[in-house]
Length: 431
Image 1 (tube, rainbow, N blue to C red):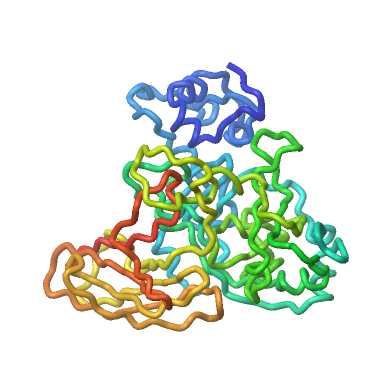
Image 2 (spheres, helix red, strand yellow):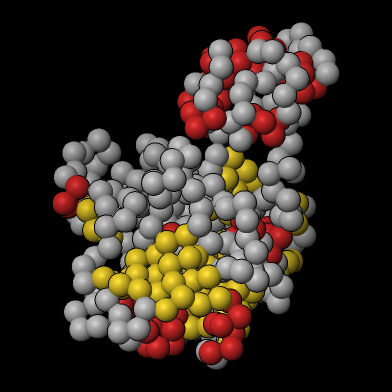
């Protein structure tokens, strides 16, 4: 069975959604094509052709299983230890224990794509256009940005709006992120506010619209994979950057090279990658992934299965208060006395406290909490803990922000699985 390029699903999605067809194509089709060919939709492949072997017990493989031999390394070049969730589009998260650094290394920054990255990403010829309701529409190179505006470096947290989706019961649709769709890298660029001021927003501007060079999964040039925006007031804050460097080096290709937006504290979808255009509008932007239920939650609590009209969904703006235990790793053996540490963050606010429990929430102890490196950065915390005896323990972490909001043990379900800020729990085996 042949398949057109623009109809080929990703490997993981293909096995998950149509396992019987995937197994038939993958194990019985004509051999000879590369694994890469499958990923980009060149056609059917066969495991025998890829492995050079038959699989005598393939019929015993569990439904939906993706063979372990097809390693993720070629998809995640330049990344270290990420967990692949989907390959078309490419989405990968970072295990919590690999996020222990105060500044997330480029190799450990998660990947969230909606379409396919551009093939050509030459920083020397890349341009950004600012237009719409402005006095002076302008098109600039990256060099123009560097020469005409103050260049700043800031530690800024980016978190996917669906981070934590895997913990909803019943499951919500979408990539099943656990806790690793978050990072705090050092970004270098220019303030979006400075660029917009030079262009001169006209009276009546209320929203930005962001456009990138990534392409739709269908391959159709007239379709955009995503085009979101933010209110003008958010765009004019001092920590929203047009970034051209990451951790002192170039942006990683999968993290938006050579130019992207970084909008800390709001859903990562606002931080548009492969940025080519910013348009100013006199209405809330209505591009792809801005309408319907995309990056929106019901304005009231709903039960699983409830019918919620689209007009009852509200756009997600600031992300909720959250914390993450990064050391020790989940389910690891530990000594009787150890240091527990991690990070905490809360949208546009600061975190004022992090508490830990080792007795399933019966009692709590305060962690030492650092100030953020700058507005928009997560905050490091730590606490020395002595366990009373050997055995199984769980460390629970909860953060409280500057408006008094505290992480809950559980949150209300929502149809798209957004904004899950339940307490992070880590299992420890004390020897």
